[in-house]
Image (cartoon, rainbow, N blue to C red; front, side, top):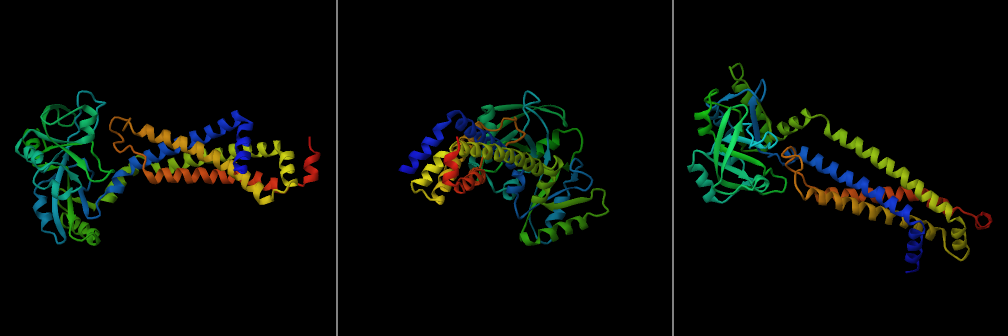
Length: 379
């Protein structure tokens, strides 16, 4: 209890300085939390990619189509368990800023490949029976206030015109990271109405029987369609998702660079603050040593002061970051997974404690080296 009294007195000695130092930690950890959220949003597809799934696109580019007839041939390749396909639509709702993923899917095979998406069976059945039906994620339902039975007008960008869909099902993800901000509709209806690329699809997704054979299956698929008018590029879903992230630049390097600068600056600020605080209390520390406080006790007192500031500031910053993410994606669909995960919070607290310990270590060691006689002579 006596140590807490000393700590509390030291923290209250310069209230403004203590508040500003805590604020520095809060700002730094708030920024860390947001950067962690952005990193998680960009790497979401990589993190949740199925180990047993392959994605097959046109060898030239994903914007080039593939024949639907490839599906039957892919199913005959050893190691392939199931195959589905989809086609990007690229429409928007009311305003171009209302962007979200929307694509046509194969009703018969989609759910057997993407088992992480769940919904009531009666809703899926209603969707399958309605040519103009669509399935939306619960994130979209919350964002636009859509419900079962609503009719959604979508303005096409690639496939022009106004397309209207009936909401027949709302899906959820089994995992927190699963994307619930997409819309699916029937490929058969899409193929009937579109004016070009009839009988062609955007990409295939397949499940393999043994994930360890995924690379070999991918190689066999590409060899099967080599030298054809529509050559393929098959790769694991994780590799495919990672390639999309790389197209946006080295997000990982950018985040690490910003974070490193922020925490290095925080280390300098906190270290300077603690050094000034110890220097101001030189005579008091000498008195404590004179009345019997050991060097170890003084070291722990100063380190504890620094760690308390770090924990308070770090906790406030991470709490603010968490509160900010509770409102969901602020980008209107660009970062559908906008969530501060528990491991990021613990990492942030660990970094705050490390900065607190390092910044307080040098002043604490210098305090233990004080000679009582010399310190008492200082004015």
